[in-house]
Image 1: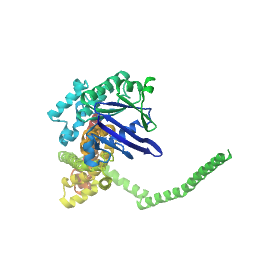
Image 2: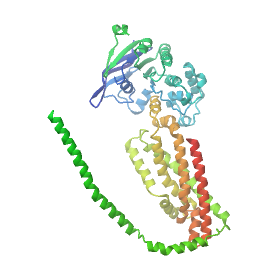
Image 3: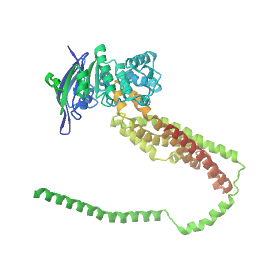
Length: 237
Length: 271
């Protein structure tokens, strides 16, 4: 199967430290790939370099077979729209409603006055409502983000990523700030989306048992290097 | 084993030397500071004897100012309201000028330094020159009256508002900004959607503070002919009508206190 996300030789140095050391990976449509590793192993740097929120030093990134690493300005912005993201800290605009936060995913399609006033066009508002309903938050659509629980906030963030209608979803420790039960629900939702919408999901985690339960494939990150998690290791808890 | 200890002692010695160097620099600095202060005292012609000579004159004026002359209270109140109007309109124009400057100069919007640096120079220049000075120039340009005051307040306050707004915007959370950037939106879209809502109460509070400050500060603008109650104050002092001066001071005090309270109440509600 052709990969939707493909990363080759990604490298990032901070001072003398190799945060990412020649990392390569591929994620196919409908596949949920977990990157497992202790904190400080380079998982977040991998996430930030693939999204280019931090610029990598070397390596190539392809999204839908289009080179992403060399894009600049408007082309970079347009290509970013093809990557959905979920952060550990949810990163919602606290003082806006759940619906307005989901609308973030459609921001490039909105004129400035609609962004500033919050008068969203009906078709987009309906789509945002559907995205919220699909994460089980239909009745919270007009609630302010900072009044929602952690699990609800992360589900709004997932709906925000869905709104983008991207084919790739990158998640950086999406359940690290949630209790175990909520974590399972959120990961289950993400896995279901990979299967039903054909999303390619790359998700960093630090709990092996969650990775084993939800991921199709596990990659191990250690001191900036990535390797496959083989079956023998998987057998040992 | 010997070497690190030796190195350690050297380090200690270095620190001591550094300390004594600072002590040695302190004394000349102190002498220089005192000399500067004495020079300032001389230049400002401070004289106790002149103050003592003047005191009886102040006393007679104070006595003559009682009771306050309330015959023209309605006119004075109207002039006070003119000051409030000048400050309100001046600050609102200032805010309109400040909006683009603060967006260009805030460090977390992502504007290139080629544009951001001149924007910062501009706001510092506007802030550095007082509204009083601007008003003086605008009186010459557009004639006597409150409009010159409005322009003076607007131009100076634009710099102050832009600086305070930019600083407030810089406190906005980075997380929601990164999430919005990942949607593919441009800088202005990201600002309006993810940064502005976060800092809006702060921006409003700054605006109210600048309004309150300018009501206080613009009472003197009349002295250069730029309208408001300051003009009455200057006329009355020139004509030695001290009972009228007292009334004007009372009107200013009541007006400023009311505006301060109103602004403080509104700002408390914002936070």
